[in-house]
Image (cartoon, rainbow, N blue to C red; front, side, top):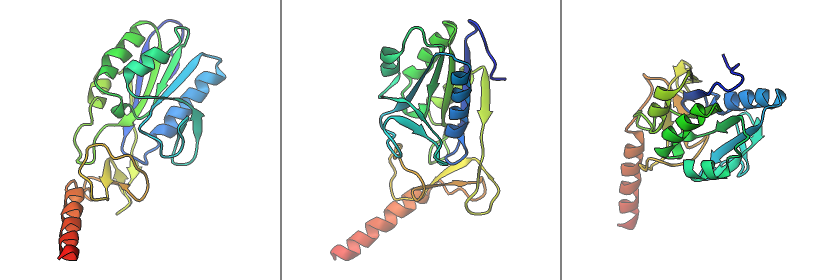
Length: 203
């Protein structure tokens, strides 16, 4: 759809695993809004500095200028009341307050375009994305290509030995996997393997 005009508030959510083109789609929609001469503001989490601190950058090196924020309260503080279109990348990192804030913006007649991971490295819902999907007017689910077998991929596979929920990274640390090839306990196995190696080395 992507053609909301006037004072009709509208929430669009683009979700899926890493390497599925979420940021690329977000950038495309925001560029169209800019071409239409709408007032656009774009935000990204300060934690995501993989490619640039002041741009949203897709894996194919598409980019658009963005302001770094810690959470939804930061977005609210930096938002110009005249802004018509708000873009948010990696929304899963901005906290639970994002949901109520986004709904308020839509009720004010703003168009909000959000991109983010819908599941974490264990395949669980990555909050607050499920809640954002529930309040969205439009949802786009993107799929990647499984790096193991080439089938459509819905999961983000963590390859490194780290069991923290949030570990920002890109190629080499993560890859896309289909349901069949996805190994949710791989990070735990790698961590255990590393621990054993360290014990052997210390001994």
